[in-house]
Image (tube, rainbow, N blue to C red; front, side, top):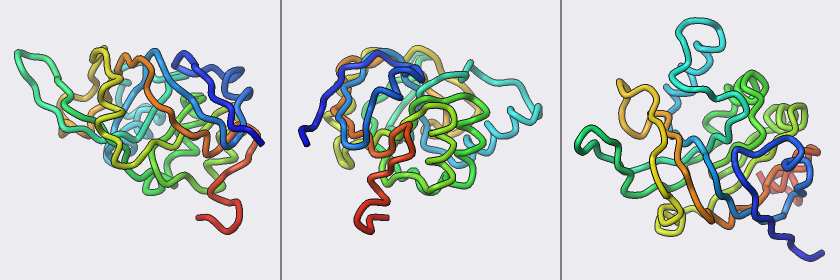
Length: 188
């Protein structure tokens, strides 16, 4: 089977997500949201439960587990590099976040478990696997920081909306039809 490569605009729609199959490659342009923080995910759950207002609109966003080395300079957040962090540590929270915010694309490295796969199938979403150690490749695609949420948190825990161009390729590791490459041939 030939590997298909798609150039897609983000945030990803459910229709675009459903057109992808596990194993496809994606090159992303548009807007994505990144964070690396478990405290951030807990805080997002709080927002869904009405504890506090959202710092930015995340409905239908494409949210990725990408850590960063950043600094604030002249009142602006500057990202010097971004690199994927392990998604499995967010397993317990992701089904609620995926369905609560209707996310059609999430990702990082390491995959997500079966309840997350089912949540992605339910909303028409995919998990995109980023190249671990690919900081230079990922970082060169950043065009600008669009928006920063929760500036009271550590920099790599903040929600950061980025405009990217030609980011990738990334692998569709979990597709919107419930197929997970992490479950094939005993992979975990």
